[in-house]
Every structure is written in C-alpha cells, then in structure tokens.
Image (cartoon, rainbow, N blue to C red):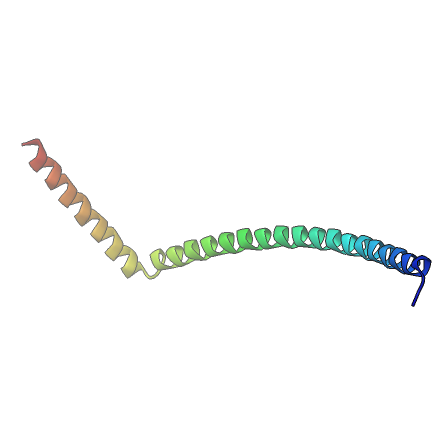
Length: 96
C-alpha cells in the first residue's frame, strides 16, 4: 500500500496536469471565440452582399420588363393613361 506521501505526490501531480490542461483548453477556447467572431462578421457581410445583389437583380428584371419592345412600352403607356383617366373620373364623381 502506498504511503500517504506517495498518494499526496500523485494527487499533486494530477492537479498540476489538470491545471496545465485547463490553460491549454482556455487558450483553445479563446482562439475558437475569435474564429467565431470573424466567421460571424463574414456571414453578415455575405448576407448584406446577397441582399444587395438580390435588389440589383430585381431592379434589372424590372428595367428589362419595362424596356422590352416598343410595343410593350406603348402598351404600358396606354394602360397608365387609362388608369389616369379612371382616377380623374373618380375624382370628378367624388367632388359632386
């Protein structure tokens, strides 16, 4: 049976190893936190860029649909004029 001094030495040795492991894990944890922060920033940047590109795509699709052929433009202008006339008629009726 080991003596009390030997048992105490083993406990002290294990304690020192645990403390050393604690510091190693603490350092690894700090590095992982930094990596997490940088990845979060990169993700936010990507989200913003995606949103901007989606908006540009929407605008381009809209511009393409409006600037189609001359017939389309003429149709759109005629529809707008019809809507304006209808609105004018409604305003006249509301004033009566």
